[in-house]
Length: 620
Image (cartoon, rainbow, N blue to C red; front, side, top):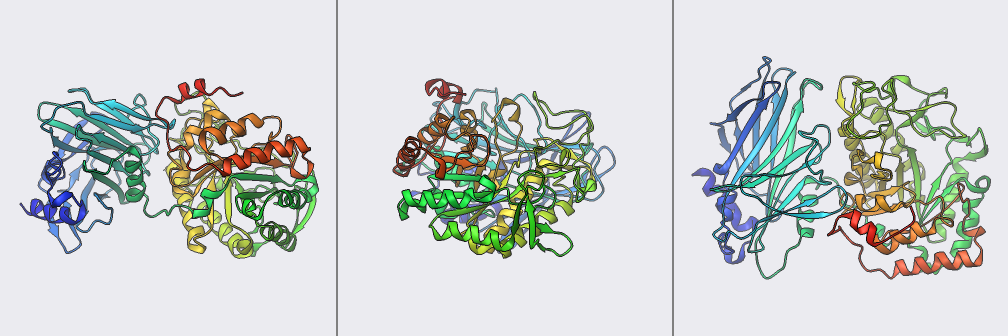
């Protein structure tokens, strides 16, 4: 009775139903959200013993209601306590967000699967009820619910319960009822979640299941997960799947603000890779400024790349905690003298011409194993060594290390650092902080390139077994918020390249917790749709190192996904604006101005992207 009164009191202000009537739209939302309809099921491996938690101790304060279940005994002798916290004054709009806290009293070495189950009374009208899934490939797929046969979809990070269900880009699904009302069921993105929905004789059963793989990564510290339900009642304002995805970001990622407004105005992106011995940057930007209006220049983002001396420390001096005062960029090949003064001058030039400026932060997690500053104790080492996650490809070598980018300016093989190592995470944070305080006045954004080295399911070993994919997403979130806290008008981009090649399907969507994607996918057509849901609130772009010879790829992205026109200098085609012929200049300017006139980009696909690609042929 306490919860029925509490929830009913909340709903008046929380859900804003027409006329304040929870049943005004045909669906009895009070019954749907009633805590008495909720069950928690625990399953233990390896014998799959199942138990249902019951008889929680209930406490209430002015802010929240707390359920604490009796101590859970794990078959291996461990114990934990599970707690639910439901705020009374939820700031999430028409929805409820709650916390589920798992507190181990001893280290858990058993796999623990937890299922949250809701039962919804079947509406009076038993017409077709559908579920919408935000698939990884950008398709918002609508599926009719079946009687007794569950419709399932899975979000994967850290752990997953089955490899056979459709993989979704965001941990949210939407139930659409015959009266057009909608219910979104969601979780935070920091651990895999299996969503299951079915109809039976009594109504609809919704489940969210997730796994702590204690046999592999022992469960020692308190774990907090967030879950949400969001309601859009049927009313005069038409709802769409857009509202559900908006609700997910508002409720589950409210601690990662969307990027600044200016990122949505960008219609051209320029990547300079230390072109023309370092002089290409200035030449190209002066030429570009001469052929664009001041209003157009504000819609161009220029990425400053290749100015660091190595892939271990970049510009950071560990001994002093400052940016190096002088160094030689690309010392093994181009060997261009640089200094803090020169970098500031070149960045200031771009800003003075009216362009937005992006600084190349780092080459993913890689460090150069042949360089004197290489830290082997920071290197990612897979717990499973030669084993590889499901899929046709892995960056892991047989020793369990991740081989990264190597080129003419690397001293030896490069290897990825482990984001689960606290020292590694702290180093990237200190490096970013130093860049902000040294060059921040001349910058609008950072891009962290090649953030795809840690695939879904990777487990690192130092200082203890840890889900490195979860650690990587948490590190991206930390750095993104670090930039926002320094200046809300600055942005932090990552490089996911999901499906740039078929073997890149197991890359986590780290851009979900950043300000967008500026990826080195070379504008390949098959990668664009995979960027749609993770960059829902922000922007996604790509560099194109073949801007002239593969111009059709840039054109395809602009016309079909609203991406920015991609130009570059210093690599592959190695042709910047100062080197364009008149016909090349006309080609780029025409596409740029077409992009400037676009209103809104497409948010998701309503058909299978394989069909979309067939209907929109482009050179591969």
